Length: 209
Length: 197
Length: 228
Image (cartoon, rainbow over the protein chains, first blue to last red):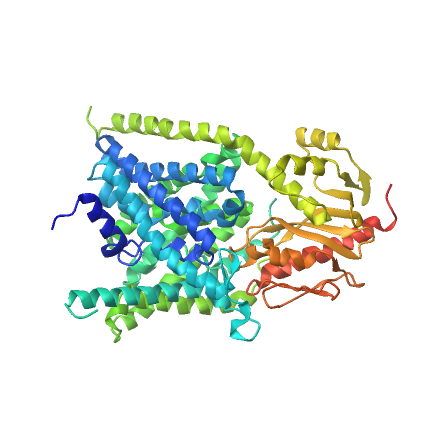
């Protein structure tokens, strides 16, 4: 069965080559912003768009970039799109811009974007590079949203700021604060990796799911 | 407005209580990848610390003497990344001359320091918090030392658990994250220790 | 021309820098006014809410004009001295902006005092807008104007559940409002002598407490003798 290249890229970036679960890239922001769903939404949309447009631009410029300055040009193009996202947030969503703080600027160093630029945009045409960037961002988004839903729900009892659980479900007047702090992010990613990898290994061994 | 923090407190806080890796999650990619090997972890830790101090200092100067006076603060990210790239390039040349063995061990991870989020992160924190020069250098030095310490600790632990019986699904990045999670929890224990201000 | 030659690299670098920086400066120019206005509206809004006056971010022009209508004071010799909007603007233009302004406004609940107070948080400074009733016996409102605390932890001092604790909160005679660990939903009792901290954000909470207590002391001293 032949799949169109676009469908193939989509499937790979979302599942078989998921940036976080398989390539283990883009971890820094995963851990930092997933304690609140609203931050995660904005961040992931930002990353998806920056990745898409950076890959597109770099693919266009491919022929002309000298080898010596390849990495710096990649980084400059990524910075360019990140600044655009930053300016737009500051002008039209100042609350979220403040809430994300330095993590908007850190989109530049998000390994996923560099990774796609090196692995795909260099060797492919602009349009499919744009698509590859976008779908990688989507693969990133899906994992982060899942983590954020967990963390915000258990840590604050809310989703997008709307209370869902009564915070006192532990019965001691405390919510599960550690969900909001650093370690939980690491543990949750570990658990997600565990489930994902085990399913993958079972499938590969031809065993039952 | 520059906050009133004693630089030494800032130094100690950035190593322990606000460890740039375990509390701010910055610098994870190379942290996970290189901690497999103890010697390279050591080398990378030193390199990252050196890059952090020089870059934050240079970026502070760029901010104060170029970006703010010229009113082009919106170009900060571009200027910072250029400074980082330049510093890393210089460091690469120095290491190649001084210690070819280290140069070979680090391989691709040396130029990759350019996109190590810990470096850019430290620069951005310096900008957002309005540190003065001495505070910036203390913060950068502390962040570097903290990062170095964390990668040494992790690589020592990996030497042990890489040989331990771990469920197949958890091998590799999985168990590494669990370990880092525990390290992060341990470091939270430091937070009462030092009042950052 | 050889792509790898030094001359090409230099020309390419110059062109790409130009190509990247130009659109950025355009976008920046287009949005500059808006970003600046956002900042002014945010500051004005915070002060109005802290004083207990109605303010709606969806009506930026009204927020700005209500703010302009407040009485303003600056510090001179540790006393409050009235200052006009024009004087404030002149000072800013001359490069020596007035460092701290105090406000007084007529609210449905009577006269209210307010100001922006700064102090150290965990990562950097916290700037809080605080409002007090005429005799500094109650806090009329609390807003976080500027903070760089950890998102999801210290940064929560900006959230409504935390800030609402201060609206109408009685100030103990000692002048020190206590900050105690709570349920995470905020202390709804305005007559006790404490408010809840942000769970898990000890240093930010303590920093906030210190700023609030210092502000109470400062306002009590400054308004003690009465002002014209």
